[in-house]
Image (cartoon, rainbow, N blue to C red):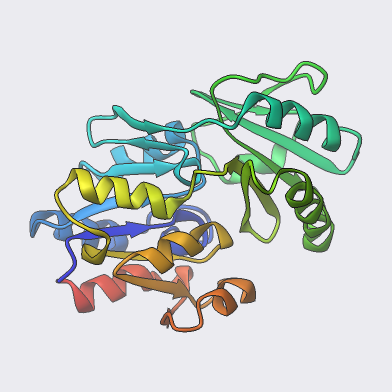
Length: 265
């Protein structure tokens, strides 16, 4: 039986309005009471996730920025892998001339953005961005750089995915977390490798882990875990990448919590 439960957040564990629903909170607390470890495994910033962990009320580990940061249950950093400074400067130089592109940077405790975007308030209760100058971007302590568009045009972002992979494919892990959010981490970063590190610290292996996700940034985790479950609403690319993995329901039905209640409690 699985000892560790790891879950993505947006599109997976959270409801469509980006909240932890009451039944999900109840199930995760019950899992904690019977000795199961829960791990947040998300592209979100650790400051953002820490607020959710406090609301949840259990001592969960946090894999954030797609594995570029791992915090233990006490909030201490146990793993950190930054994007290389030369990669950051080159990527910003390439992308800053596209007026439709919003450029985001997660640097240490900060979220930086190149232009105002009031729509992002819907995703975050207590965590907000600061503006930065694309002509003088920060190069140190950067967990990830990511890109969105106001029109959420996936195909336009795919064009950027191809360009960035052509230039930085050996130095970066480039993946979509949602169809409208393209993310760049260091090449050695993934949720799967972060999960492996957490499991090892707790005295377990990947075979002891069950994981849930819906994005291309979840593929390594879902393939490396003892069992990886894909959300019904996941992008087709995720299902095509993992044809042997089971598909469960949708986040608006709290499918993760129902699966856990039926199979681990």
